[in-house]
Amino acid sequence: MPAIPEGSLVLVTGASGFIAAHLCSVLLINGHKVRGTVRSAEKGEYLKRLYDGVGDFEYVIVEDIADPHAFDEAVKGVDGIAHTASPFYLDAKTHDELLKPAIEGTVNVMRSAQEFNPHLKRLVITSSVAAVVDPSPRGAKHAGGPPYTMNEEDWNEYSPRVVEEKGVDAPGSDKYRASKTLAERAAWKFMEDNHPSWDFATINPPLVFGPVIHQVESPEKLNTSVASFWSYIEGKKTDDDLKESGGNWVDVRDVAYAHYAALTTPAAANQRFIVSNGPFNGQDIVDIIHSFPDQSKRFPIVPVGKPGAGEEINKKATVFSGHKAEKVLGVEYKTLRVCVEDMYKSLEEKFDEKHVPDHRI
Ligand code: NDP
Image 1 (cartoon, protein in one colour):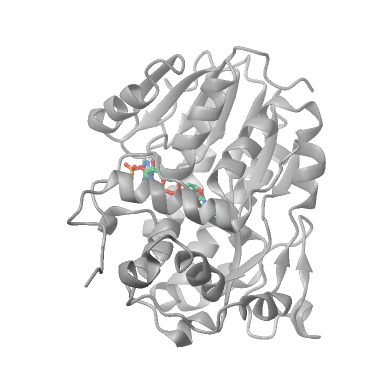
Image 2: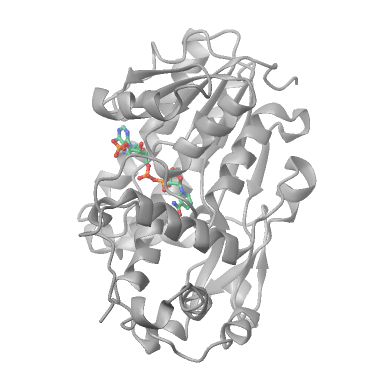
């Protein structure tokens, strides 16, 4: 199947989000026109200003992706769709608040595309390694103990089961993981049941770090993954937090590029892509923070731990292999140092002095 043609119009859902704002940027820089869905005109106007002079960006308001007709109008006339919108937080009270928009939002965009857009070429969905990982205490695959490498063949069978059994009492992390697993499952089932004329791909990142370009007024409003980085800067971590693996990570610019490549690469059709640059841990993060200029005065409450000890921690961590994305999509992963430096710089520029902790004495 052909991928989307040059200069074509692409719909990006949840355009106001951390990842989506970068994706819109990559699409515009590469000559595509972008229609973004946002929940408010204020967020849409912010994006219009952000992309002023970069390319042709328009927005439409979609207040709730769980509304069955949310995307009926938005999908009309586009060649490609990147569906990124989905709630990502780990402290959900009910499972429905995550599962409903994740699953129904995914199916709604697919159903609208099939019904209202006969010319659509490709649809790419932002899934997650949450839909790949086996987080069970002694998952069968982990029985021999880590390190274990997971790839696109793997599925998280555990979290949906936990949520089904425990309901609202399931851990927040499993509620989120179940939302991503069941949404991606629903998408593949839609393809199987309906055989639409367009093809489909998923991008499955681990924790995404990198510069913030979307609208965020204060650190309290940061998206979940960047907020987890900010907790080091704020001094909310201790030496003990540095000893465990942080999971795997990837730069937001690589994730954005992977979505773009999945829309434009013929060979990406009907494939799943893990986009991951491997394991990291808190020690790796603080080692980079402490290498910033003037660091001992600026960040005296950021733990020091054992500088350099992160390498050993990473050797024991489960790896999500991002090789297929390198091979098929041409992703070239950025280093953690470049990522953390650029992420910090963007936050320093974004927030005024009262928000950016400067712990100078
Ligand atoms: P953000 O929270 O920054 O962006 C989420 C986007 O979805 C926002 O535009 C948000 O709108 C929109 N949205 C959420 N719920 C609804 C709803 N019910 N109706 C309409 N719009 C909604 O998250 P990220 O950019 O970090 O995540 C984007 C995608 O990537 C998600 O699917 C997430 O699961 C996935 N992902 C993220 C990872 C990460 O580490 N960041 C890792 C792996 C996957 P608004 O701006 O108004 O809140």
